[in-house]
Image 1: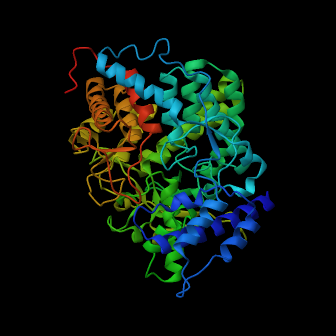
Image 2: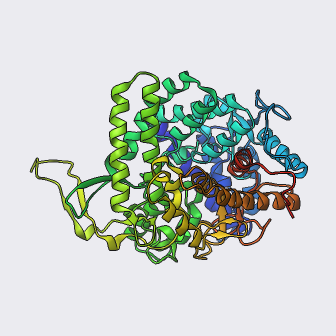
Image 3: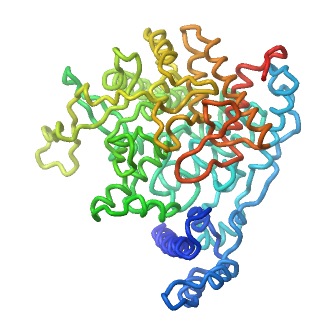
Length: 563
């Protein structure tokens, strides 16, 4: 493993040099740094580096554009050539029982087109990646994958949950299981599910939804062998998220200590896939400030919300990212979901002691979320900012302890009172949607301003970042609408209305562009999203999955207009 990590580090370092050379030589127009970090080497790294060093330079020591282009063409294969387009074995043109509630002929025809995109997005990692791993940043996975699309040519962690929900609506159960088995293999190798299946993602994860994937598949198939395979990996992943740097202890007003979790990447340098962008962001900062910023950038990427005002102390500038200082509502809701799922899986395979332990863990986290994050006046859960000036070290039991937990003293003023869609993600988790406060939460959500003509906005702040207004993202639409629909408050009509707004904007955009997009502008039907560090991508895995899942849940009657 150490040799593999060394080889990977050398390859990434070299590819960053190539990335920077391409930017310096050809300029920023249409420049995507990820492209050059993903290029497969045609020859070994020693040969390729030697050829790069020997490239012809101009009088000012810059590289000759013609020679650099020739070098790229000779020494690298095409981007994406290390994966093979693969037709899933369980794909059929129109699956039996497909979306029975979709009666409108136009919507039904379009939903079959979305279903057919699984063929376009399915890949098998080439055997050369396994044989010559040191010539690829792509990681080998033994089963077929569904990629998001466009520049994202590898499997991603939290995207995969909504891909799987779509695959289940498409009756593609084996493809869905294959994705889970691939992710389990990453846990077995690295101790957690990586952000994505690339060597440069081994420093961080993404929102932990593996247990939710297993639960969704198990609910449809009853496959007990899946639970037996998944449980050890889930226990390992759970330790990753609930110990060490990810764990934060907060002491409440009653002196009760609550254990909650945060995002925290193991990285303090520019992200290899965005090295040139991160260096530009940090320009002008002192070296120690750059290191801190790079850590916060990578941690924000672990959150899946890369980037938005939610993680910024001034809610405007990336240089004020403080992701590691925030206990996020949604992360802890996902971990509560994981605890509940593990208890259910363990019971199903007669691991009763594990089941009991995780019921207790879920009870404690439920209490912690409500104690630290619930704001009764606002009627929603809020991210909590850690106040390091009001902390103490727990050394009561061992004055000589080498690893002492930092305990933070609860301060209600540390709740972030800005409205984000993430404040309502707990609605997706069963204990919260049957809570006595559910009516208050849903009424608050309706008055929040987040519900726009074409779906739920990520926030109310227009910062130019992609995880802010006016962008809407498929996962947030799905979690909140499904949570509202399943709540004890009986708000299904509200959920169905929001879901159909989202489906309609996807439909209109598809008619206009012939593609599904990763995000949408929720102010106008059919308008795609923008902002962030790259142009809006098409494909698109989780958008397809959410549309199919929402149509399966809410349908589209023949007499419901789409104009």
